Amino acid sequence: MFKKTKVRSIMELLGKNLSAREVSKVLGVSRNTVAEVQALILQSDKSWDDISEWDDDRLYELFYPDKFKYKPRYAPVDYSYVHRELKKTGVTEKILWEEYCARCEKDGVNACSYITFAKNYKKFTADKNYTSHIEHKPGLEVEVDWSGPSMNYMEPDTGERVTAYLFVATMPYSQMIYVEAAISMNEKAWLSCHVTCKTG
Image (cartoon, rainbow, N blue to C red; front, side, top):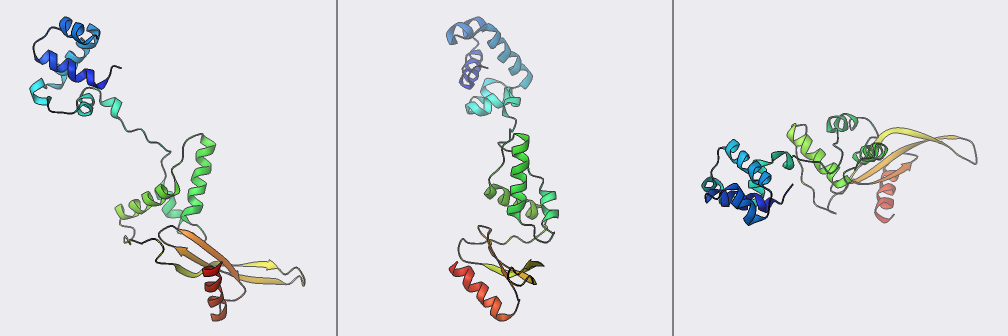
């Protein structure tokens, strides 16, 4: 396909009533190319005066709209699936993004960045009115809570099965997460987890 600037030049000369042969000679393009643009002008029902002020991209898009079809740079994300999965205990946006990246790698296609994944999910929920949109500023807030079901581990010295509770802290802007297992959910454990989160 010839350059976008050639479309403008061909149209301009045709608008000055030059013949296809003359346009071909002046611009150094084939007569077939000139004839193609002539046919497209007739199909568009536009004169040179109508579109002389348009930029090259807009002119080219008028005649060759297929060339301007959106081609995604990465595989699409099923945000309906993401929204459903996030309702499950222990599932985070980061986990779902990593799952998406693994699928893309397996299929041999590009994956979007985590920032794009999270940004588009926020837009998805806002468009669907699933949640109120809350703006967060970097580094100003941390959301903390006991999260998910309890876990168990075996004490190596005694063989005793110990119940552990997950303390989770999340920075809402960056979605960075800190997780710590504690053997109790009392006030002492709560404060200890906060200290470790801040200093660790």
